Length: 95
Image (cartoon, one colour):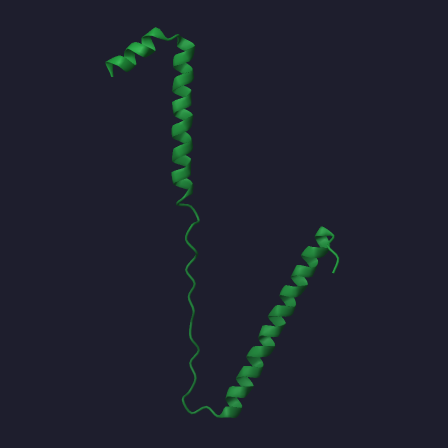
């Protein structure tokens, strides 16, 4: 520490201020990197609820549920496709 103090005593005021600012900026950048690494890194928790059916369902009921679920998937896909088309049109991308 005595050597460090001796070096700073021989230097001018401007050099001491510049050295202090360079150390401060370096410390700030390192701290920001550490803090930023902890922000929004984990995916949000998603809860998935299983569907419950009676054990004595008929094949017709199962097929009806599958058709209903397939229609819902197709509707969601169509809505998503329309959203992508709107985004493409806003950027001037042709089909």
